[in-house]
Image (cartoon, rainbow, N blue to C red; front, side):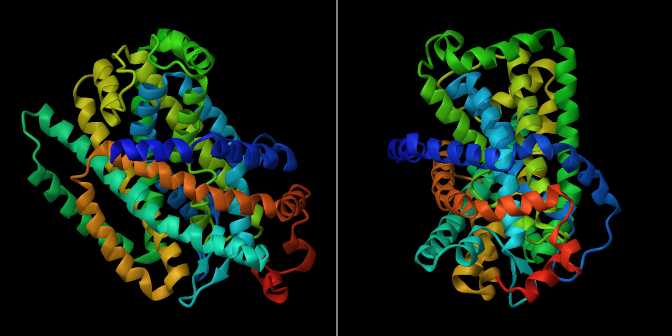
Length: 472
């Protein structure tokens, strides 16, 4: 099964996929006037300004809650296990291509969040819903509407794999490291027991819908991210003299991987493929999933929430993933090139510098990240299922998520990661196509926002008021 999935993965993440992801991202970068640079200062100001925002209206969440929900889905095992696996399989050079993917992905996610708000609707429960499926249905010709269904089909599958099983699997692995460190012995029965406890907890949280998920995410994500970054910065301070060498290995390994990995990784294209695929796995730019969360934000103009999408990728890939990569490279721990060691390598790197106690801390951080990720992806999968089957499907979907949590506790890591990467690639295709088709509308919204002459000022009232008078 693993060999078969590896062949499928190499096809899904072959040259066409890389050209599509990077090509659409570069196209949007040029069309928006390099928004990741020109709008970045405004995104930072808006981020800090969100703490002074008024309470949300019915059917929406605050922009900060939407951002934390999206960040919760992206800041997960990909930042710990995914980065470590990228270095082990592709060498340090894979991180360089993750940076490239992240820089381009900032614009891609800006486009996703902006268009998600532009094309959102209210469902039968009075909640704002949006995402690639609504962008396709409301913005593209009818002959392409089948892509909305295809996207939701892949989204439901991904919610059980990339957004659930891989997260729980990594959590169980981290907890087992703690058990081993204190002289215990991990067993399948213990793993299943932990999975059942997590299943009960996540069922309670997911049953509360988008607003409960948003409230939990805005508390859980900042706490976990701040703690992890503090520990990472501590390691970098202690190994400050090795940082220049780590950056050198990243840059040289991107173009001469054989020289850095001792011949284990010899193809620049393989390093590029691994870097981009793991980059998309960590920040989800190009997949369109985060736009489902951003669509529910209470904003006056779609591009306002687009800025949060831009900032989301920066925090996830440029900050957190870079800290993880540098910790591994400066720690002095031996990197088993050619093996996907997952979160184990990250834990070893922290322990090598700061001691075995960091294993406990990392397990707690991983649990925080993974729970937030399962919540975020639970929302994404439920919205996709609701698009396909109606709003009533939410309870059934939550029940199936609980079962997957329990099963994820005893699955094999390698197979789960392969499935995750395959589905990621399949989801990206319809999303990137709709972004390219709707780019004229994106440019119009971006220009109006840059001129500070948004539709709300021109026509009076809120953005939703305007588009209720002017149906999509």
